[in-house]
Image (cartoon, rainbow, N blue to C red; front, side, top):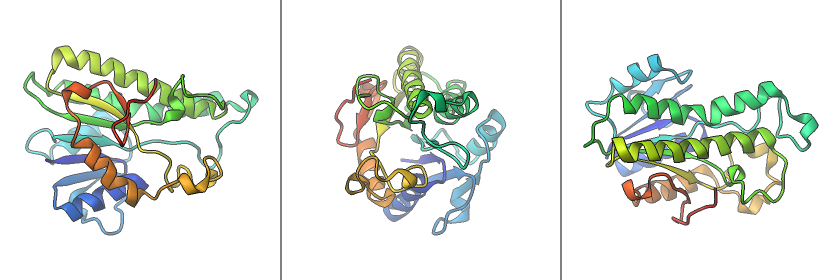
Length: 231
């Protein structure tokens, strides 16, 4: 199989390193070239837009079998996850939706213009149980939760569309669990640090989980053990 990984952060880099170890072809698209990854297997992508996709996909003779979107944001230098509703800033809410939900839809739109009824692309996006309406028993983290809920709705809606247009393709939301990455490191007390895994440990589990997925799983929200998660 041939892989395209979007996002060169902690998990994206770990996936690339694991695929290198497995001798499987991939391209890692992101803002920087991580150590240990050959420059020829990377593509500089500063933003998610059609022009970037046009250049990126010229690296493939055909559409890659598996596309993994690891792009996401929980906080930045100016905004931390909200504990109270008074802390919600409309600028950060919009930025969270743009970063967490838009890339998957942008990929879906690009692929939809190039797939046929015989295309068997598997689009994987990383979601989070914090985006689940049912599982939200704690509150807080307004912008992150709302943006991941928007992502989940986008995955479900895209899957319904692809079922009719591209029955051999699939889009699936996977929850990798909390990891030691810049996304989570400032918040390691939530959840307890002992439940947080390094990306290098998550990457092989994620790739193994992807190998079990196909059109029958399109539109689902799962953890890495294959358990269905509540929307």
